[in-house]
Structures are given as structure tokens and as C-alpha cells.
Image (cartoon, rainbow, N blue to C red; front, side, top):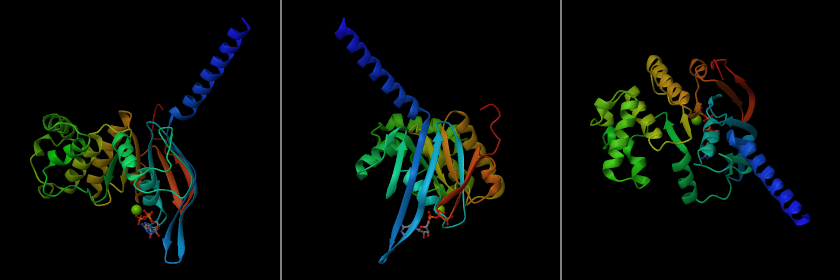
Length: 258
Ligand SMILES: Nc1ncnc2c1ncn2[C@@H]1O[C@H](COP(=O)(O)OP(=O)(O)OP(=O)(O)O)[C@@H](O)[C@H]1O
Ligand SMILES: [Mg+2]
């Protein structure tokens, strides 16, 4: 009886501990605490991120603003496991990111993250379908299957008819849609976009933002860097960075029934 009580209390303790861990991390897709990053500059170093705290919940649509050199891309690259921080903690989907070699980082990137860049970064000699299918190739998906899935995503971004076109036959907005389809094709948890509308005219920019909004409505966490106030205003939350420090973090009031 006594032992049973002890086992029960230990079991209860373990269950409670596990629940606490789950509650603590399950709703936080990105959790950053006291994050620092410096780059070596000759004998000195350039302190770029100066103790950032940032929590992004699953399903949030967040933009980050700040002047050139404030550290936006540095932050996004760390969040995207393309670069490493020097100090502080970064948890992605509850997992502490530390001591990752490139292989492990690539596995996590493939599993959790999709990237969209200002310059689209499409492969020029591959057509739209092949560009979208490429991340599936790296995941070991067979040719037929990846073409089928890639086509679904091209259709989702409204470019089914453009599947056989090379990037140089597409407009800027179309290229960015292909890049978004490519970011989504592996079904990531988070889409990271570094100035996705930076190379687009105003109306094309808004249609790309509409697409990101739709993706977010389906439950995707979206984290986007922008220079433009009206682009940031289309997201649900704006984080402002000045000289490597977060100076404000506010909801835009866009989300109606959060
Ligand atoms: N790999 C690197 N090596 C050395 N310095 C770097 C490196 N990457 C960025 N920096 C420096 O860190 C600072 C922040 O750069 P970052 O690219 O994060 O700025 P940003 O806010 O994205 O600016 P922009 O709006 O111009 O893209 C800049 O002073 C930049 O020169
Ligand atoms: Mg940048």
C-alpha cells in the first residue's frame, strides 16, 4: 500500500512535470531569450543583436521593422538556423537550439522552416514546377510524387498554368509566388520572409501579402521582415528593432477573432 502510494505520487509528479513542459512550450513556436550576436570586424567585433527577447506563438503573423543595419536579417537568419547566436537561448518548437552542426541544422530547417527572400532565389535554369519541387528532392521524395505535390502548391498560389515557365519568363510577383510555393511545399511550421516585397511594386506587394495572409489563416506561423509601414500594417503584430534592440512590440488589431 505504502509502495503503491509512492509509485502513484512519483507517477503524478512525472505526469505533472511533462504537462508543465508541454504547456510551457507547445504554444510557443519561437522563443528567444537574451539573444546576442556579434560579427568579427578585424580585431574588434560588431555587436549586432543586443539581448533580444521575443516569443512568437504558433499561428502568429508577425513583421519586424527597423532601419538598414538594425539587425533584422541577422535575427531572421538565426531564427532560420542559417546562422548561430553567441549568447542567450533560442527554442524552435520547444527545442533548444545549441551546438547544431550544419547537418542537424539542415534537418531542422527541412522539417520546420520555409524561406522567402527579396531576390526570390529561384534556380534560373529550372522551370517553376521544378523550383517548387526541389525541397522535396532533398527530402528524398520520388520524382512523380514531388511533381504532383509541387503542382498542387503552384495551383495554390495561382500559377498552375505557369508550371513549365522559366523564372525569366515570369513577372516579379509571379516569381515571388513560385518562391512562396517552394517555401510551403515541405509543409513547414514557420515561413520566414526577408523583405519578400522589397523588389515588387506596390500593388504586387499587396497581393503577395494577401497570399501570406491566406497561408497564415490556414494556421502557418509567418515571420516577415519589411521596410514598409503599409506592408507591416497587414500583419497582426509589429516588432520594431533599433540598433539591435527591440524598442516596441505591438498588435496591429488586424486579427478579428483571435
Ligand atoms: N556576415 C556578416 N559579417 C559581418 N557583419 C555582418 C554580417 N552580416 C551582417 N553584418 C552587419 O551586421 C549589421 C546588421 O546587419 P543586418 O543584415 O542584420 O541588417 P538589416 O537590418 O537586415 O539591414 P537591411 O535593412 O539593410 O537588410 C550590419 O552592420 C551589417 O553590416
Ligand atoms: Mg536585411
